[in-house]
Amino acid sequence: MSFSRYSVHLQDRIAVEIILTFLFVILILGVTSKNQNHGSFGGLIIGLTLVGIHIIGIGLTGTSVNPARSLGPAIIAAITGNSAPIEVVWVFIVAPLIGGSLAAVVYRFLEGSKSAE
Image (cartoon, rainbow, N blue to C red):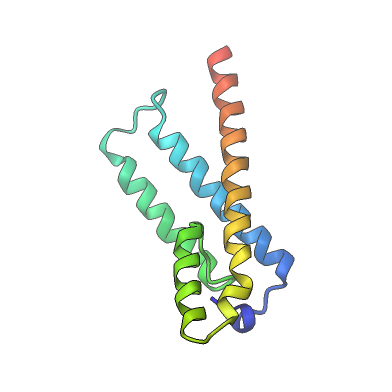
């Protein structure tokens, strides 16, 4: 989880995490919406999207998209004496929260404009 092996700058890492989380959350909201009819493919769509997000993001930031996925390993690493992950875990907490919040706002706007038609 340490950024030392990634050549992407901090602001770019934050942007990548925000964008990937935004895409993932807005997809989940769209697939699980009562206004859409995706049938039994919803889980497959969500799973394949998560795989794609990790394929893209792992090479850039080590990707998280889920703060719990980064916080647990960072705490364990700190307990065992490796402080590097806990020093950067804030990126994997703050950026997904921003991305998820933006996705919720955008989705609500898009759903609202559809229902107005």
